[in-house]
Length: 149
Image 1 (cartoon, helix red, strand yellow):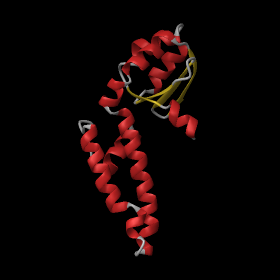
Image 2 (cartoon, rainbow, N blue to C red; image 1 turned 45 degrees about the vertical axis):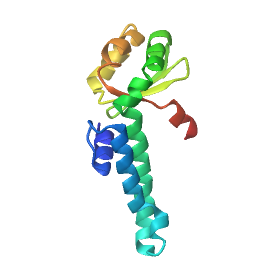
Image 3 (cartoon, rainbow, N blue to C red; image 1 turned 135 degrees about the vertical axis):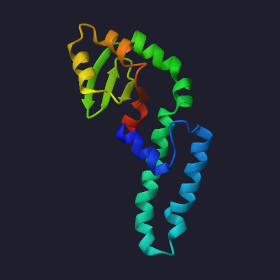
Image 4 (cartoon, rainbow, N blue to C red; image 1 turned 90 degrees about the horizontal axis):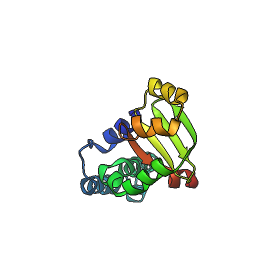
């Protein structure tokens, strides 16, 4: 959740910001912070390079968790969680990453240590994920992001 809040703060948006508005905000920030626009100012150039990378990362992340994006990808998500076995899962701070046998990987944000412990002790982890995690937490598909990194 800290990651989500930090990115929203960086772009000055909230959870109700629609994709169209998010894109406009992103473009305006990039006009201000794009390194090419500050070639004449060497002191600001280094800052602009860092800031523009942060803005790009925040924008792509927020697009990936936007309700419109999740709604568009819901059929694939539903197929994955109902028909594919869990290959691996990893918990870090408040983010649970689950890898499925079909090759999809999803991050769930705001998961508590208590929920993770219940998952670890569940007799049927896939059923636990479907019942207690999938609909309760903000998620994003990180399959394509992980392949690039």
